[in-house]
Picture (tube, rainbow, N blue to C red):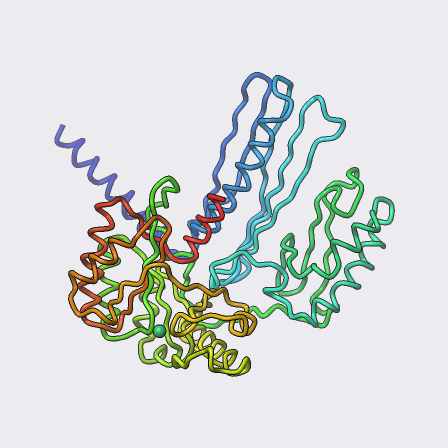
Length: 425
Ligand code: ZN
């Protein structure tokens, strides 16, 4: 008995050892497989699971949407559902997944084929569209070249009106593509630009031909997509709240990060560009712990008083310095003093986010008062404003998280909150 126990512990040790080694690797892909056969229905699903939570969730969602469609189609008939994939790591920054879906049943004249691609940028923690990797000038050169190639290659099944509209002015937002150092490949689903019998079609264009090159930079960056994999999944049926901190980082930020980590919580830090270099370690740690960074201007000038050019400089300089020291690119701007107007909005591509609950930690001196008034105002989906520039805020965070947890709140970043709101719409 004792011997089995020791063997058991030894085996568990190996498992822990192996998973530790696996977790330590930047991307560890495994393939999810489900193959089943029931009453004339055959299902084979294979797709990569990367360990990058955001990417994995998008892939899983795409697969389950297809499976739902399949389940709704021609019930009781002989039918087949197949999910296949291609996966590759372009470099330490870009990961690409191509999923192909095949749905068939005996009532259909032709099976249904669909393709979906995911070009994931680990430094931005997001799926890219064309506009993320090409400038407007490059896109302008690309469109006629692509149209021309398309007409040559698929002249027998092309739908000209669709060609003009799909590969047209809005092509910047197109997302079905993959690339490497040499070429860019575009995919189009059946009926998108071609008659259905041509199936999924693709066109490959050398970067050279459009006078362009993918910037496969080797900049130092924190692998932001990998960092939050230890966090528990957000339960969409439960309440959420987004803690946000403005004006930092400061000497108090590290303590706040420690509390957040201990409580398995995350927050969003709207930082000032001019502090980034001095607190670069703190900021990197914030990212590594799964927190989000936002832009709060370079030096906290009142944005409503600045010209459009000055606002842009404030915002862009901050984006640049954050990227330089962390490889991270914020997607949200919180204008200074919580004031936003049309001029500020049109000065930036960043999304503007304010708050709903002001802790008044900058004004009230007593920790208990700050916590209590915040708890009075809080609600599901609220964004709470705090400042990681006061000693008392450290204590506020400690108490507030405990109280919020007692009321079953989960902690999310501003981006996660936005995603949840979309999901619930
Ligand atoms: Zn501020």
